[in-house]
Structures are given as structure tokens and as C-alpha cells.
Amino acid sequence: MARREINFDGIVGPSHNYAGLSPGNLASSNNAGAVSHPRAAALQGIAKMRANIALGLAQGIFLPQPRPDHDWLARLSTDVANAEPHICAAAMSASSMWAANAATVSPAPDTADGRCHLSVANLVTMPHRSHEWPHTLRQLQLAFADAGSFAVHGLVPAPYGDEGAANHMRLCPAHGEAGVEVFVYGCAGGGFPARQHIEASKAIARAHGLKPERTLFVEQTEEAIAAGAFHNDVVAVANENVLFAHEQAFADRDGFFADLRALMPQVEIVEVPASMVPLGDAISSYLFNAQLVTLPDGGGMVLIVPGECMTTPSVATYCEELTASNGPIRRVIPVDVRESMANGGGPACLRLRVVADPATIDPRFMVDDVKLSGIAQVIEQYWPETIHPDDLADPQLIASIEQARLHLLEHLDLSADL
Ligand code: SUG
Image (cartoon, rainbow, N blue to C red; front, side, top):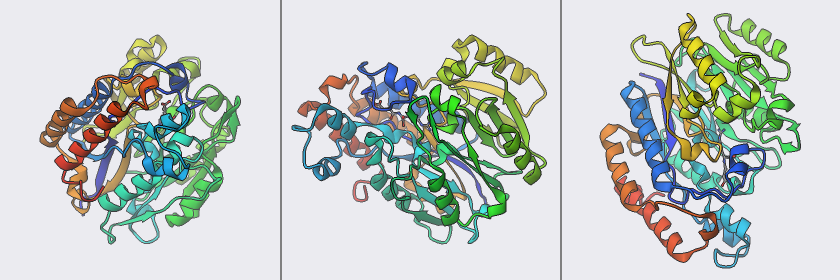
């Protein structure tokens, strides 16, 4: 059984736009009303995946969801032509691109029945994301249909907010070995809502059959939420035995680190002090919304960061020192995902990590370089070049968005299933 980490990236959907729908997510609020570039956005995502494949990493995809979401509008007893602008924008959002919010994943070595467990996230806190889960669940059920290897769970009931893997970290000696799972939850911060509730995290840990003594529930600081860290993955990321986190990420930092060290003595905590990178710079650059990955064949760990890190002086200096030190993170690689970044989604938001044997996954959800070239051609041909949020109800735009998605499904032989 060749288990390895696979990154499933959400392909940026053709309706990608800046409607300012996520209070507490500063990029989303600051860019409200701007013109988006769906084609460029999706191609940036493809380029990131291709670069990761070139590094020797395994890559999967999730497909854009149908937008507008007619079913959701119907449940609100309206339709695109009649919905108020904020409802129309919510029905049109391409937010399912941020696959880190699709589900929480517990790999097989951590669970009671030895299967990899996935729980779809309810995303109830933000209206535009609250209707993602039915289609996400459908894709999870297709991709991970092998019941001997996977268990796919439904959602935790409202009002308990669950935003998936963005608030979940796993520390382990190596991906295929048993780990410690860390669920980070919030209370509130600076008038912004906490999007991950402890009740939801605990329900998922129970559903996945995790060992209570190897599961930690850790509170995020209010100051991080207030400063714009609406998910833990904006201030921390973990990979194998390494935790990379900002000094102000966790409410009881000392207690958490002590618990972690007791459970996993080989853990290496790389903590970034506020004196080197102020919280505001960490959040605007998305330093921690990075993909911390282990290269194959003993290549060590690299940190794949948004290009914005290189233009934020404190962060650029920190990254230089990080790689010059003898620490576990050997290289920092910038990638351009600026269209997603302008809505508060960095490289790590765009992917869901699953540790599994790729042979157990529906091959239509796995990609290589050649397959990504084909997907890029569909995007180049059919994705809109620009969208202004005032035009979201335009019937012609809507027709082109719906057609674009259908072309991609057909290209990937998924039309009959999604
Ligand atoms: O949920 N942005 C997303 C960004 C999600 C980032 N994910 C992680 N950190 N894992 C959100 O806030 C903005 C959409 C808009 O404003 O139109 C948005 O939904």
C-alpha cells in the first residue's frame, strides 16, 4: 500500500468575482467591487499544480460547482432574475475553489477502522459558502468511493460552524504513520465571527474514530481573528514533524506546545516572532497560507508561498533567514495566485490534503502535466476574461459560465456524474 500525500486543488470556476462577501477576510472586503479575471485566475491555479507536479508531488483536482446555484435560489423561493444583488452574488460565488474548506481529512493510520475519513464542511457562517456542501459531498463520494479505503461523512449540523481542513493540522513522523491531529477553533475577534466552532471539531474527531489521547483542541487567539486570520491556516501550517506558526496564533501557546511535545517528542516548532513579522504583515502576505511539503527521495521540506511574500519586506527578510538557517524548511518557492489572493485565498487555501494510495482514488480526480494542459485549453477557450460584480445577473454572462463548466466536465468524462 503506497500511501502518500496528495494535494487536491479546487479548479477556479468561471464565475470567480470580487463581491466582498466575507467579513473578517480583509482581502475580500478590500477588493469588493473590483474587476476579476476568471481565466487568468484558473490558469494561475493550473500553473501552481504543474509546478508542484514538477517537484515530484502527487496532484488531484476538484471541479467547479454549478453557478448560479439554482437549487439554492429555489430554496429561497427566488431566481437569478429576481434575487437581491447580495443573494445573486452568493449564488454565483466561485468560493468552492478554496478546497482547504471542503472537508476535514483524517488519514487511515490515525483512525479506529484503518480507513481514511473525510467529513464535508458545512461552511454555515458565510451565506455564499453555506450551499457548497451538497456538491462537495458529491465529489468526495465519487473521488473516494472505495469503501475499503475511505469513509466519507456528511456535515456537522448548524449552528456549529465547520470550515474543514483550514482549521485542522496533523503532525506525524511521516505521512504514512500515525499522527497527532490538532483542531483549531475560534471564539470571536474584533467583531468578526469565529468560523470554526469547537463543537464541530469534536464531532468530527468522534466521527473519524480518532484516539482522544492523540487529538488536541486548540483555541485561536482573538487578536489573530481580529487582525484578519479568519482561519487557522492564515497563521499556521504543519507538515509531518514540523509546525510553522506565528507567535500570536494560539491562545494558550505554551500549553499547546507542551502538549504537542509530550505526544510527539520529535516535533520541530518553527515559530515566527511578531518582532520579525508583525501579525498584519503575516496576514497581508499570507506567509502561513503556504504549502509546506516534503519532496520525494529525501529532498527535504519546501514552503510554497504566495508571491506577495517576496514584496512584503519583513516577510521577504524572514524567508531569507529561514532558508539560511539549518532548520527543516530548506527552500521557499513563490507562486503567483494573485487572483485568488485578492479574495483571501493563498496556495494552501486552494488545496485539500489527503494521505492515501493514489490507486484507490477515482482517476478522473487525479492529474498529471498532460491532463492539466488539456484542462488549461478548456479554460483558455471558455472561461470569461473579466467579470464586474455588477454584472453577475447578466443572462449572457451566466450562460457562458454554465457552458464553460459543462465543457470542462465533458472533457474530464464527468458530465454524467456531476
Ligand atoms: O471563505 N473568500 C474565502 C477565502 C477562503 C480561504 N480559505 C482558507 N483560508 N483556507 C472565504 O472567506 C471571498 C468571496 C467574495 O468576497 O466574493 C471568499 O469567500
